[in-house]
Image (tube, rainbow, N blue to C red; front, side, top):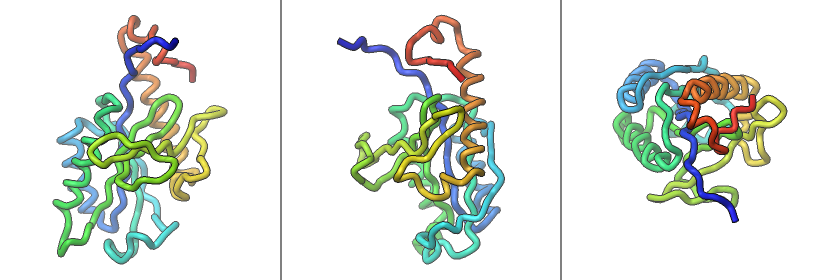
Length: 189
C-alpha cells in the first residue's frame, strides 16, 4: 500500500502567443501583478507551425514563455487557466483575441499544460479544465511526447524549459531541509 504524502510545489509558467508586443507587455504586467514577479522570459520566436490562430489573431504571431518566482501547488492549475482565459477576454477587440495564454507548470520530471479541450491523453482536473503532460524530463533534458505540439518540440522551447527547470531545482534546494527529505522532492539533477 502506498503512503499518502504531501506534494511538492511546482513552477508556474505561462506560454503566450501574440502578434503585438505592446499587448504582450500589458499581458505580462497583468500576469506579474496576479502571480508575482516573473523570473524568466524567453525571447520571442515565430509561431508558424500552424495557422490555427491567424484568422482570429492575424499574422506575424510570436511565442514566448514566462515563469514566476512564487511556486504554486499543482491543484491550482484549473483556477489559473480560468484566470488566463479571463485575461484573454480583457484584451479582445470585436470578440477576437489578441493574445493566447496557456498556463502550466514545470516539475523536475515534466511540463504540464492546462487546456479546455479533452483528448485521450488528457486528464480532467475540475471546472472543465484538463491537464496534459507535454514534455518529460529524460537524459538531462526535456523530451517531447507523441502528442507534443510542434512549437514545444523546438530546441528554443526545450532550452527555455530546461532553464526554468534549473531555476525550479535551485528553489527547491533552498527550501527548508525537512521539506526536501520528503520523497516527492527528488532533487536529482
